[in-house]
Length: 138
Image (cartoon, rainbow, N blue to C red; front, side, top):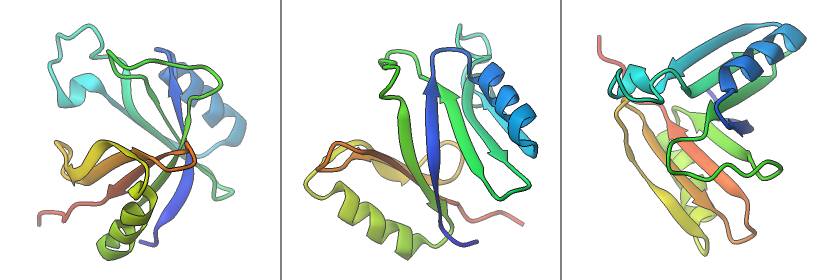
């Protein structure tokens, strides 16, 4: 898979509704994962969206999620740029350059879903997320 760059939108508890709306607008395939899929199913936010991804017939990719508990949601400042793929050296190179002189908010390391993931704010104030697909088990 080639690396991809796309917008990632943070929502205040209505990511499912928003992503379903965007699917109606653009068509395509929508996948949704909840916080409960990867954490305690009894947690108050268990049904909130941890990650949503819409792949449209026109080739658009739109990602979104509910803002995690304890993190601020700032309308107007709630879009991040996502870099993802499986070319680890390429994506590590982007990460190294984007995070240099900026602020790492989530270190680039293996996550509970099996991928490497990190987040940073570059020296210009732009928020980036980098996700490197993990090796699939046979």
